[in-house]
Image 1 (tube, rainbow, N blue to C red):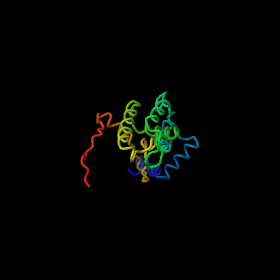
Image 2: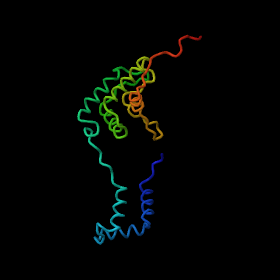
Image 3: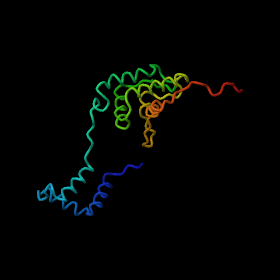
Image 4: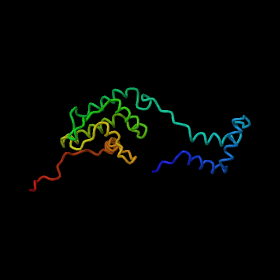
Length: 179
């Protein structure tokens, strides 16, 4: 989905209210001069356009992720091995960066910490059986930007596996070695 500029939304809103840019400016100037009352149609138009440019207030971490989020983040990190992965990066990451990614995760997904921990343990056990080959770091497991403004969360995928009772089996598909 392509993000649209707020200015595009402004023009759509003006079109919806059937006014031109010049009319909008005239209404705005009347509002500044104090000649527009709060119960008038003009004020409602200004209010609806002003809402386009209002920024969302960020929730505090403890409200977004729960009061004990720091302990939960620690538990999440402890699920990952303390060693370097085959790609040369450490499996665990900086706690502050992990908290930042969890902020994004909780703003976009609605999973409990129990589900998150179960999904994380499933993920780590799955890759432990493969000597951590191609395993993502704790940071990238939560959120990974692919460079094209697309963001992917393996954690969300594994949370869905937990909710849908999909278990990982370490059964090997190929049992014979072919030379």
